[in-house]
Amino acid sequence: MKPEYRSQVEPHLHPGEELIAACECGLAPGMPDPPVWLRQPPLLQSDLERRIKSRLPGPVRNLLRPSEPKPMGRFENAMESTERAIDNGLMRATHGKALHGGWDGQAGQFLMTHYSAAYLSAAVLMLAVTDRRVLVLADRAKLWQFKRVYEPQWEAPRTVVADIRANPKGVVQRGRVELVFADGSWIALVASVPTHAGPFAAHVGA
Image 1: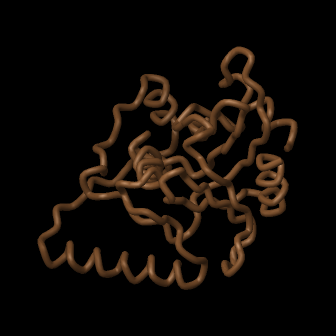
Image 2: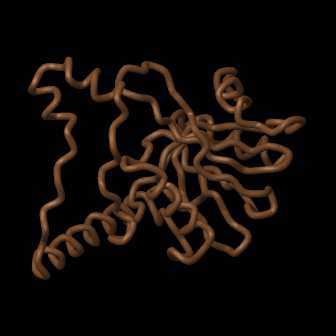
């Protein structure tokens, strides 16, 4: 485990809680898109964000401005759903399944928490295992911050997670980590540094 991982996770631990292992990662390719009812309206910006963006050149501000969703009819919705299904199918064929158990499973609930935690889902996560919990921190660094700024996103008792598998057989994807839940559902993540996946899983299982 990299020393900076420990320093990033320890502020979020409970008194007396021991960090066993941590791994920086992101969602695996081919992850299902969030359900329509989970898509959120843009969040209000803070005064500091507005002041900083107001000093940026116009083209940069336009690039950072979230686009308003356009209303779609049944035909457009059907086409979009078909395109996403094809893209997800190609990803699964290449990299393997990314989510097992559907939205009602514990893995699906994990993914819904990720999608609903913020208007823009974090691209970088920190998966940490302690002697009490499994927790996920999300990088919420602002535009002017050059270092990771991790905030709690999800946590559960160790008993909720049955296993953590690294580089499973039959899947061509370096750095893959599968979080297996007690109900049999699982979700795939990919370590930012692929070689960290194996030692992370081994250390948790030791």
